[in-house]
Length: 338
Image (cartoon, rainbow, N blue to C red; front, side, top):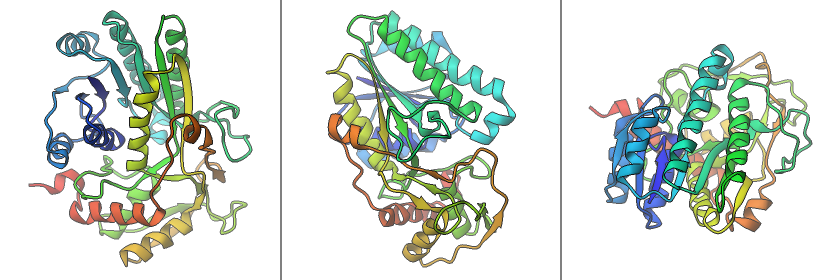
C-alpha cells in the first residue's frame, strides 16, 4: 500500500492516477489547503478505481498515526506542503512551520509503524543561483527564498533520518517546471487566487478569466530577453514517481534525482507555442524582473534516465494541448462544476 500525502493537489492527483493505472493500491490524505475535494472524485472517475481518503493535516501526528494503524503502508509519497514562492517570502515562519513540521511528523509516524520507504516531492529551487547549466544532482545547493529552503532542509532531515535506520530508503525528486494536465481534461492545475506560475496564467488569460499575462523581464541575456525554464508535462512527472516506487524498494539510503526534460523554453516561446496549439492570442505586458528570478534554469536528467529508467516523453505541444483542454473544460477550475 502506498500512502500519498497531498494527493488532491496538482502533481499529487496526477501521480495518483499513474499509480492506480500501474496497479498499485493507494491511500490518500489531504487537508485541501491548496486543493479541491473534486480532484479525489475525478481521480476515481478517470481510473475507475476506489481508494481510501482521509481529510487530515499531515502535521497532525495522531490523525496520521490512525491512518497508518488502519492500513499496511510500505511506501509513502510526500507531496503535502505550502508551495508559493512569493507567499513564502511574505510569510516565512508559516512556511517553515508547516513544511518542516509535516515532514517531521510523517517521519515519526513512519518509524513507529516500521515503514521504511519514502519518496519526497522536492524542487529545483534547492540549487544555488550561481550554478552552470544544465543542473546536475551534484550542482551546488543553496536557496533564494524560504520555500526553497524548506525543500532543502527537508531533504537534509530525510537524509539524516534514513541514515539512522536499518534498511530504510528515500528518493528525493527535484522537479523542474510542471505544466500540462491529464489528457482527459478532467484534472489539472487549479491554483488558488492569482496563479504564481507561468502556465496557469497563460491558460486563464486564454479563457478570459485574467486580462493580461505579465512577463517578468525582457532584458535577460537570452535569445529573446525572457527567462528560460525546463517545462515538464505533469504526467511525465507522475510516471517519474511510479519509477521511484520501484527504485526505492530496491536501493537503501537516500538518492536524489532531477525530473526535467533537459531542454529550456523561454517565456515568449511558451506563449507562441500555446497560441499555435490553442488558436487563441495571448495578451501580455512586460513588467520588471522579479527579485531572485534566474535568467536560465534547466535540468540534466541523465541520472534519472540511467537509474530510474525514466525519461520525459511528452512534447511542449502536448503539454499546451492538454492544459488548454483542462482549462477550456473547466474555466474556473474545479469550481466550474455546479
